[in-house]
Image (cartoon, rainbow, N blue to C red; front, side):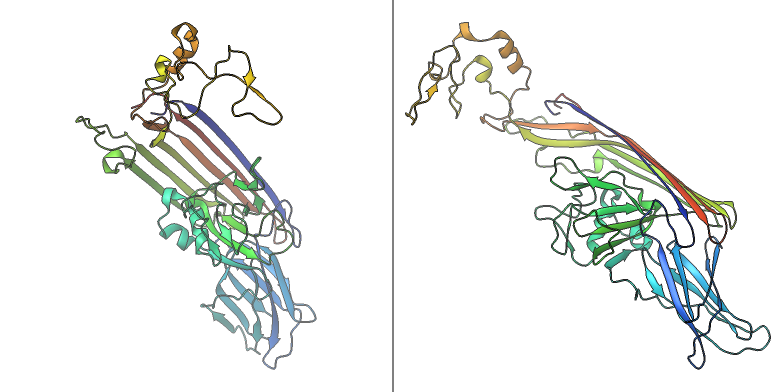
Length: 455
């Protein structure tokens, strides 16, 4: 294992709360969608005072609008979901379109044409073509839950799906699995890497990392099975997104509906199925005894569940995941050579100097003259009487080298233990058709340790 141990603990709490009114949203950015349209009659003339009702097909929560003098209606603050939209006015056939899908931060248009009707006539369109985002100049790519659920993800890290968006490429020398700083290590349309803004349900979950020169870290990454969809917005977005270097990843967490829905998962990995890496060969050079393979283990399991607390009114969504990860870590480092443990530094590439000798002019001479300590006598072999017993004891605390090189002379294989867990709790409540409240609490915990003894 590694010659030195380390311990790292992380505890992350993320809480968001929002109150939505007819035209006002507090404490969240623009992940919600908007829908507008014009209602006209068969002659093309606009029709005012038409009642337009939009209903979330999952929660059966409805919002109502009326067309103005220009025949226009508006809906704002709509959660990304699948809707039915109905237009009705006395004397005309009621027209309804179902299966209307609104995505993250979408501003869509849906027009209606009403025709005169007899008694209780109704036109229902059950298949609606995808709506064009004609009112928003933002360029972006929607990554829907089909991609998130069905594409294999290394380490269940869905930020690799950002590479499905046009203009998003890997960082030179990295790969799609390299997500440091977490979730933002990609370039988008020529912008600098690791400067994206990450939002969850409108709340910012990324911030510049100290000491990284403006790079961005994601401080909380929700579970794969909890993300409904996200949108990679990489050009011409509105001024509300101002904390980034050119890209916004806008995520939406799942919510409860009138029907209970949930998932469960469990993944495991064992060392018997793992291949050895370069630094952990089966046999060391000149040794006939097999070198042990690290006993790596990974268990990752959890669940998600959403449903109604009160149908058509109050909904919940919860998730939980626990990970037990014992992973092999291999590499090569520098430790004191066998000669150095006995005070013999004659084989060093660099010269060591005797601190007990007086200063002398440096060789070669410099202008202006500078003074230097003379090198240790005998070519770098420290006399026995001058060897510090404490220093010699410290040298021997290091493991013995595995090869005769001066530098990078110790190959190590260690096990790093990284248990963690995280969960989300989300509640949505419809006060009335104009007011609703939503709250979410998220927590993540991890504890990383690496042993200090070599295997």
